[in-house]
Each structure stands twice: as C-alpha cells, then as structure tokens.
Image (cartoon, rainbow, N blue to C red; front, side):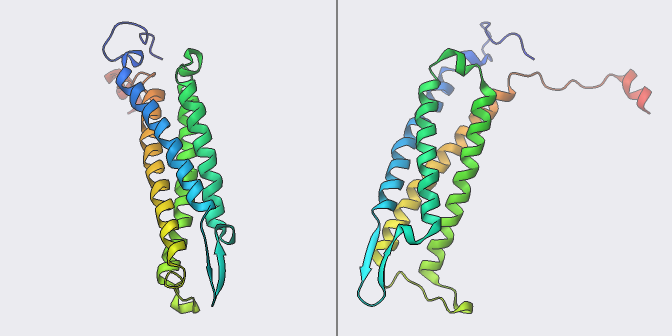
Length: 187
C-alpha cells in the first residue's frame, strides 16, 4: 500500500482538489436530476375516454425507476456531505462499492423504462400489442422526459464510479514485474 499519500507529491490523492470538486459537483447534480425524474414519473397520468386511465403505478418499470431514483438522490446527498468529512474520505473503498452499486441499479431501471418506452411507441405485433403513444401522447412525452433526466443522472454516476475506482485503486502500488531469477525458477 502506498505510504506517501499525505506528502507533497503532485500525484498524491489528497492533492487533487479538482477531482474532489468534480466528484462533489456530480453528486450534487444528481440530486435535482433524481428529484425531477421522480416528480415527472409520479405525476404522470393521462385519461383516455376509449381506453381508460394510465398512470405510473400501472407499470412496474416506472415504479422501479422511482424507487431507484429516490435511493440515488438520497445516496448522492449523503455522499456529497460525507466527502467533506475527513474520516469518511479516507474510506475510498466505501465510495467505490456504493457508487458501483448505485450505477448498476440505475442501469437496470433505465433498461426497464427504455423497454416500456419502446413498447409504448412501437408495440409488439407478434403478440398483438399495439403501440400506445398515439392514444396516450402526453403520458409518453412525460415518460420520455423522465427517462432523459434519469439517463443524465446515470451518466453522472458512471463518471462517479470511475472517479471512485481511481481513488480506491490508486492507493496501491502497481504490481511489480517478476525478476529474471523468479522467471528462471518457474521455467
């Protein structure tokens, strides 16, 4: 493990204020994106006299996106605050694991909503599902906008996952190359 993290070397992690600023900015940016995703999704409903009322609670993928967005926004808020608490910043592995988990959950919820959007716009003719956006245009447009906000938050978390991976793995020395004597013994 590296022991020079608190020295004045330019490669030291503690001397990367720009990386910390980017990290905190991305985490703070995720909060309104997640809130917008939740608000657009939860308030999304449309009534059609022919086919009836559709709302987000009718679609499991949209409910899943709301839950994940709430978790994502809450975690981003707590993580942004804890970045400034010195004892937690030293726990790079904690940020690495949680950033990875949140990013993976966001990918799964984005995939679920993308499938719903695809079926809503195109239908599935093989099993006689017709497209629904001609009848529920307002609902589809709000769902599409919520997906865009969710995708932007996902992009932020992908960058955050890379930053936290850099922080976690830069604490260790790269593996050393084996010496010629060791190679000769193995041969």
